[in-house]
Every structure is written in C-alpha cells, then in structure tokens.
Length: 77
Image 1 (cartoon, rainbow, N blue to C red):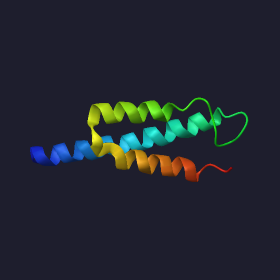
Image 2 (tube, helix red, strand yellow; image 1 turned 30 degrees about the vertical axis):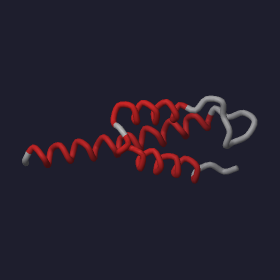
Image 3 (cartoon, rainbow, N blue to C red; image 1 turned 120 degrees about the vertical axis):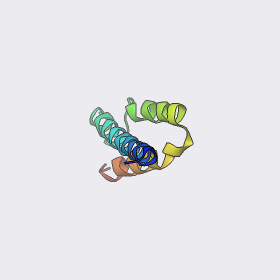
C-alpha cells in the first residue's frame, strides 16, 4: 500500500468518525430536552462542528451536513 493510499484511507476514516461523533452527540443532546423533543439548551454537536472546522478546515462540511440531517431525521417533533 502506498503512502497516498494510506493517507486517503486515514482521511476517509476521520470523516466517517466525525460524522458518527456529530450524530451521536446530537442524539445525546436531544436526550437532554425537557420542554420540546427537538429543542435543547445543550448542543454538544456545535462544539464538535466548530472544532472540526478549525482543525480540519472546510472539507468537513459534508460530514456535518450528513450528521445534522441524520439527527434531525430521527427526531420526532
């Protein structure tokens, strides 16, 4: 396996892990909602998204989009 393949594989793993982490933290944040099922004061996904944009750059926006879409599609209300 060449260095380019390893780098692409590592980059893909980071993006998949970011999507999973964003989705899991979004679902966890919605578990803390008291008044309405889709509104909460604590949203840890925002911090994860901000850190990802600062550290990894603009190339992570599709992961954040997919994670947010998944969280919102699993929310009833």
